[in-house]
Image 1 (cartoon, rainbow, N blue to C red):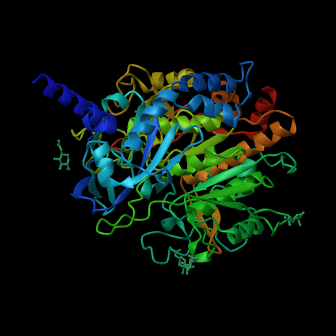
Image 2: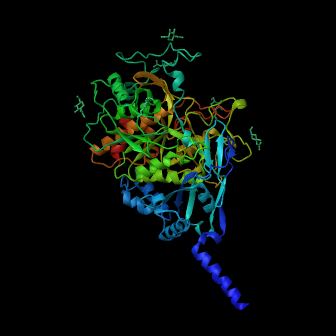
Image 3: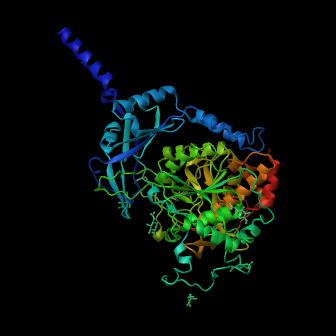
Length: 610
Ligand SMILES: *[C@@H]1O[C@H](CO)[C@@H](O)[C@H](O)[C@H]1NC(C)=O
Ligand SMILES: *[C@@H]1O[C@H](CO)[C@@H](O)[C@H](O)[C@H]1NC(C)=O
Ligand SMILES: *[C@@H]1O[C@H](CO)[C@@H](O)[C@H](O)[C@H]1NC(C)=O
Ligand SMILES: *[C@@H]1O[C@H](CO)[C@@H](O)[C@H](O)[C@H]1NC(C)=O
Ligand SMILES: *[C@@H]1O[C@H](CO)[C@@H](O)[C@H](O)[C@H]1NC(C)=O
Ligand SMILES: *[C@@H]1O[C@H](CO)[C@@H](O)[C@H](O)[C@H]1NC(C)=O
């Protein structure tokens, strides 16, 4: 009797040692209500695979937050003292103990080293495995989900972790993330309807007011067609040309098989830059099996717009276009890999592994914040912070749907919270809602007004950072206590005030760009972000020439010193979610931010900073 129970204990001990996860109890890590547009479709095909990203807990991340607060504050003695790649990596690394436990867990499931990728800091472990094994490890069941528009993804609405790992793992994705990064909306507003040769097939629109003759020999009317010259005059950069000797650089990100076309850039320069440089070009970096098709038929409207204006404004600053692959359509009845990660992660893996990333990088993609689980949004935002701490300025377009869906009529609005209750709510856009990027809204015309589609609002995830308090309070006082009560996050759940965006704005309507050899007029905050990035690149050039460090994370400087250096935009509003949206006002507002840049004034300010 006695002997038998001893043996029993021995066997339990043995099996525990051999397979610690088997008997360990698991604890629910996350459970979400998927956005209403997604419906459960089927079980994933047998043998389908998934690439899990395991985000380990970062015990020192707050130290990095303290650093960036100091080095981006122009009044702090450490302003501009950016951290090196390895300093940042030390601060984002997990503890040795976490690593041991997580490695043992992965090991215990028989996963080969060849299927594992680790970021340099080991803050992310990326494991390629069968969905059935992921289900076992996360005590969950994956399904194929289908979006109302037909797209498929493989996700689950909840997952668990072994009890002993809960405090060592921040999150694992893709599990509960229902964002549409596989179909990130470019923030290019109605290019088709505004584009010249597509007018012919697009009844209901007139083409009488647009000048799209192949070459501009006279100064265009900047009120109707935005060219480099218009921007240079309007934002006061005409008197400044980099001499190309500083080690300045600018980057443009591209996703969704949007290719920037070299020949189109040359045509654009021939059209709009006097003293024609027909040998102008940019570097192309392929990330995550990205491709680069230079056929004129494949020239991307978004990619060309971004590259032409960012490089046109900052010439001869060397430019790099990142073509990030990923997200081939997932077909639920094939056994092709369900490559269902969002591509930001892949681009961030790549760029953070580089010793010298470009000093200014513009991105014109985004999605509603609520489609990205909060923990994942935080980790992604924190990786943008890593870049800022290393001296990189990131600009993002603020979105093209005003406060949500761009719909003023309550009958047709589609803004609903993912809480299962169908509550109407403004829909902030991520990554613009991340406090460590510079979000750029849109304006139009001369004199400038905020344009109706300009995205803006208040984050449901991120707290208001120190540098925004005064500007945003000023706006909220004007808005009044009860306006849009319940529609936006005036006081965050945590009783902290939320981060608000955009930070700044720039022209966003009727940009003349070349696509597939022909000029088009395109619009969107997609135009505003590369425009602002081009101006930041000029500011960086001035700083580097003066022997000063690059600007890096820019927002604190803009809010603290910028007010006088921006053209305040006080007309316009951004309808959406069945409301007329927010109004542009004196000072900061959630449609035009601080306003549009006056380069010469900003240059004076940034040269005054250490
Ligand atoms: C649009 O352009 C076409 C071709 O140039 C022209 O024939 C037509 O009259 C124009 N339509 C309008 C409404 O101006
Ligand atoms: C491009 O053309 C300009 C002007 O002719 C010249 O100064 C420059 O050296 C050329 N650059 C390259 C890379 O050929
Ligand atoms: C590039 O695109 C063109 C036009 O769609 C296509 O014909 C060609 O095969 C593509 N090239 C490559 C290498 O994919
Ligand atoms: C939310 O709206 C959808 C679509 O209109 C409907 O199917 C669903 O029943 C609604 N849910 C609730 C809780 O009202
Ligand atoms: C631009 O167009 C608007 C409306 O069409 C007009 O009110 C404004 O005066 C124009 N501005 C200039 C500088 O012509
Ligand atoms: C925006 O301005 C209009 C006109 O002054 C005013 O009627 C409206 O209440 C304002 N809306 C908000 C949200 O401030």
